[in-house]
Image 1 (cartoon, rainbow, N blue to C red):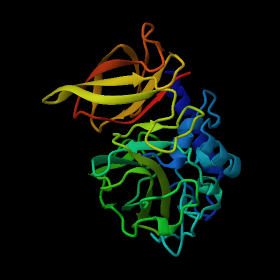
Image 2: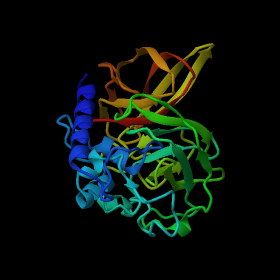
Image 3: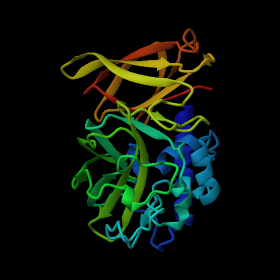
Image 4: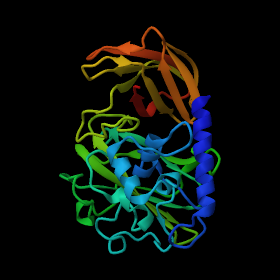
Length: 344
């Protein structure tokens, strides 16, 4: 319930800021969206900065640096990285070093080179369900690019460091949920880039077909065999420089059994550090159409499309190098993504 109130308050504040802020292009700020899966810098920094009062106070050092440069409106309006005159243009239009902001001066903090941005852990070549928030619904196409091998997150991102052609184009994705909320998003399935390892950027371009308005965004990912886990959100340690998660705890999902119309899943919470955890919280986004029926060894809270399980009293403490787990039964297809684990 507390998380639901917090999210509602933050969304309400975001709506207020939309009414008082028209993006630098001069167009009304309603036709908005950003990647939720894999999460864009603005979306994951917004999640990282949420507080019980609705204020934005990022803990992740890269997110904090971005807000110090671009202000808190850049996170209240995490869905507004756009150019009204974009017309789908990329190279030769968006300058080098400004790809993540789309050349929008209200978001220059998200162009800052930093190895600590929140990252989504993925498996190269695997099929993945992409989700893009639809703060306002419009027709258009999504173009997804990826950085070349050897990209260095501590240097400004340039076009020469991007693969020339998109690895995926989505013209008519399905959509779900109400517009103007975190619950509303476009979704489609497609294969991730093959033969990739280590840190990369998945660069998204959403080009509207009913206007020249175009949205740009950077999603920091690491190809390390993950299935959508997110690290660097909700802690001060950042996203790390490679495949080893740097949050105080990690969470991994597996399907333990399945049947027609349902399955049983298990999520293991691990403590990679040396200091015992005193409580843990795991959040994830169930697959589209999935409903969770029951959970054991933890307490479940549902908020929109996000599922959150907090420790039970008996498994609150997880010693360094140890792990615990909880299970759940759900209807729908097996799977879980955008998995995060945090500890007080």
